[in-house]
Length: 354
Image 1 (cartoon, rainbow, N blue to C red):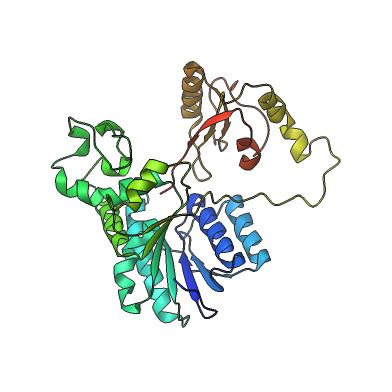
Image 2 (image 1 turned 180 degrees about the vertical axis):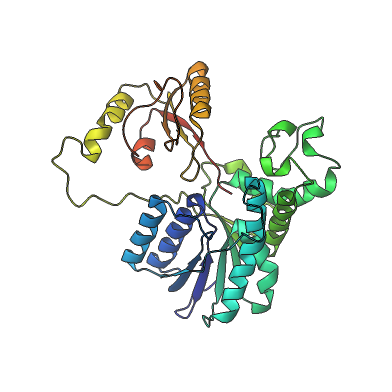
């Protein structure tokens, strides 16, 4: 697609740091590489929810860079749509339904005259609602090609398989991916009677209307899956791997002379990593939006220890403590990009944000 100086893209992000950070980084690249001359970034939050410190800092940084416009829509009020004590799956289902409606309402009332729409994949139910604009529409997947393949193949599975996926006898096949044991299927697909399942299928069906799908991966990492996606085995929509999209840490203005400085506190991690053999350490991250109970963290730590794998992990502090805490070390967040460059890192276990 030829890009002219009059192009104006709208980029719509889902809530959650696992969506917001990759979307912001994609926006930066589109503008700085002069692929899109003008871009407006839309995001929202949930009413009565408090943004994390990390989220606040990320948006402050984007505003300071001033590469594109950011519009924070009024917080989405879910109080009359879902019980406050409802499960997280029920809340996600409502979000997947309500957010596209909020963005469509905004687009129709603000005179921005977009020529391109780029939406987070989980908001793909917006695509049927904006077909009347007659402009190119792209979906952005901040996750990997394997997850994208599962999503795009879900409508086919929905038609082919009767009953619950977890009750299947044989492994579930997805082109370009290893077969999945029914009990290991993506949690959203485990209960076909739940609203979240129906909304997810709607998202995956909506993606078929996109002019292209942008995914945060690269050929060397997932060659077979990307080949399947590009050959028409799963979808006719063009898929563009643009990864890795990683947020580089901002350089500190000046090192602190204090012995408790950022680097000083974390030098122990680096020293320990330097002593490990190549490809012998697993990096474990539970994401930025979830805090596990202390007992669950200790149970996971015990499992990792019993596996025999050395690991470095990133977990949010819990509200309560119980039992022994010898798995925990004092300190704060160490920049992930500084950890993953070590050659002794051979794998990662990361949370998936929906």
